[in-house]
Length: 313
Image 1 (spheres, rainbow, N blue to C red):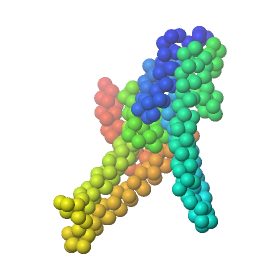
Image 2: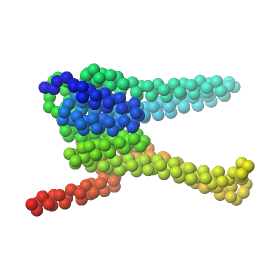
Image 3: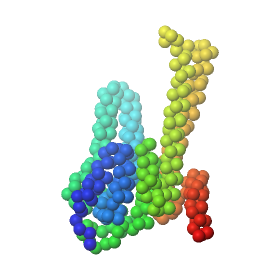
Image 4: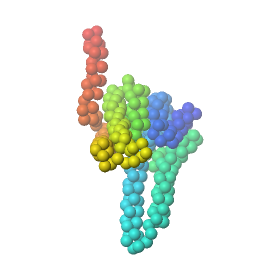
């Protein structure tokens, strides 16, 4: 029977939850905490895995809800502004109120995202068995976790690995910092679990490609501005009538379109990452197209010599 959480257990739990305030950069801390405590404390392991879920799956839900709310609000603003203008009323004051309300939505949404990890950290500091709304109890059943003080075995190992791998997939929506989840899982637990190693490596490669696409699109867009600025004379005169000016403007349009197409492809990669996370949670050994096969062959090539040597002995 596990006793009440020790100081070390509570410290890991608090750090894992509070790392959500780093807004993406702290996502590796729950993985490290789980790796350190997974066979030392069920309490600390569960809280770390909860914090990992909140920073990946929870962030995904929060971001999508936030974007949906913004889109709906903008549509309402545009419609009401059009109606007001058609009636001959000034829309300046109305738009000003709309922008103010928009800023309120932004700050409130950030506050909603941050309040839960703060409450979780405070609760764990006092040794309480905190559960996030909706996710907490479901995760406890998924991992076979019982209340502190109840007689139970360690968390189900296969389910732990599956949860960590799935959260790595879900974190693809977190620009750049989402890489830290699968990368840290690969480093700290890749040698123990072949499943977690494969899923973490292919997720790391997948997210690295998405990050490169972001960077490439930004570079292409920036390069397109160079001929546009060259169209400006020394005195700032716009040379749009000259052949050089038209050529520079054409290059800018072309590069902008290329960058725009790349940016449009990135959400498709995000959707694929969410689908991969869902499949892993459902029990599948998901393979990304092309990337999965290449990573699997690489791992097999690394492990097959050891198998041959052991067989010869």
